[in-house]
Image (cartoon, rainbow, N blue to C red; front, side, top):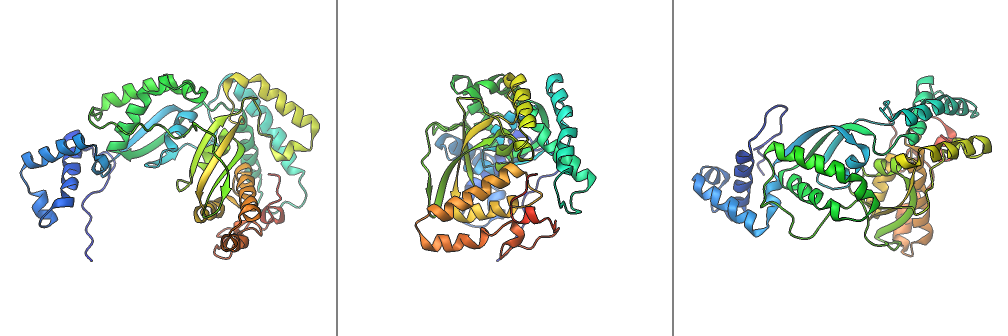
Length: 381
């Protein structure tokens, strides 16, 4: 076998639309080339152009996925980022609301700043915390939970890489968004229009590269999904916008949401047993109900293979993971073992149900927390 690099992406080195299409047209010729790459790459321009047009017209657009485009998106609403991140052909590097301070509205900011010291104090009262929980880590945990008050429409920043084809498909889906009655999509219509105008300025939108298979964004489900646990699984649970954004990082799994008819909010476990703080949390959430706080609960459907669920567990069953998604992952694993009627699959899963990922037979933790409640998955933070 011979391996040869024929293309790379590079900062500040921009291909023109013609160059992107030429590369895609040459890639289309690989399927039928009589000789080698060098012969194909030296063919007359007219032949390549003809193949580009034929490929576009036929709807066989996958060759246009060979070219990747990285966008720098500034002041993009978090929910719009989640819309993009639910599609599979992408790589994203996004400003973290877990580890950095965001710029919410004045009302949200007041609640965010109010709850950070409250949560810090509650965390410090937990007995037998290990040295893993330094003052800085405690502050970050408090900040992570306080961000539930921040709107899912709060602007963020990200780098977003996708293919030339996918960018055009996204553009066409966004153009159709105003016709979708769903509450989530309607929230995003103004941002969809703005993003389309920005994409048009790039000169990369091609009228022939559009999805003719009647697909659309996958974020919002159009029907109720049944649950099952076998070689593949489908599970429904309640989760916040914040936990969904974390879950989307697992691109081998599929996620769909539907908003709750009755507005409900995630309550951090650290304050669940304190009735005064719990009531105060709920009352504060009601103050910003029209802002769509990230604590708002959704009905989330998660689907995938049993092996890819374990890959998720190797990320999320850990003291350093967001508690909400960690508990959701634990609950899904528990249900899988209890409800699957295929013994081989149950035997495969059982070694992963004894605690955090550091207890797994095929995982070695690079940074042990030595926190008992974290290892047993009984932590409150």
